[in-house]
Length: 200
Image (cartoon, rainbow, N blue to C red; front, side, top):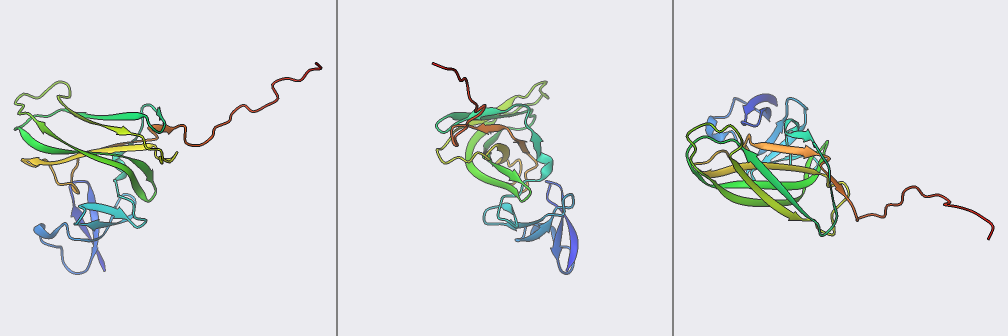
């Protein structure tokens, strides 16, 4: 078995395969790949158009996860709005998919626990904007079964007509680690002590 190089627009990934390089139209075949930055082996499933880690989590390249600039405390029943924005110049695009996910980013990839999709359109823009001119959002309702470690968020956009990218190959990925503090799920007792003692 030899290691080959494959550019999936996410980053360069080495593919484990025998023989010669595959033809361009066959680059997204099911199989095991290797991330050259981490050495992690990942499996591509064309049915879901996703990469999976050996532990079964969805693989998100590490370069797209960032330290969160703030933390937001949420409890079951709370509503959390995640908003994306970007600068856009180009033709009008209809039916772009926004992909919003809460979960756990770990050494075995991103364990997607809450996932929602939106569909939005991008108007034609002929002059480069000075500020982000396109946005989209999704509002999660935090479920009662949320775990205290579901503190990471990532988003991506893909598809549309004309298409901006495929779901598995989109370079438009961004995530925050440790963005959420999950409250109201487990008992929390702090500063436990004897408050006072006196003869009465």
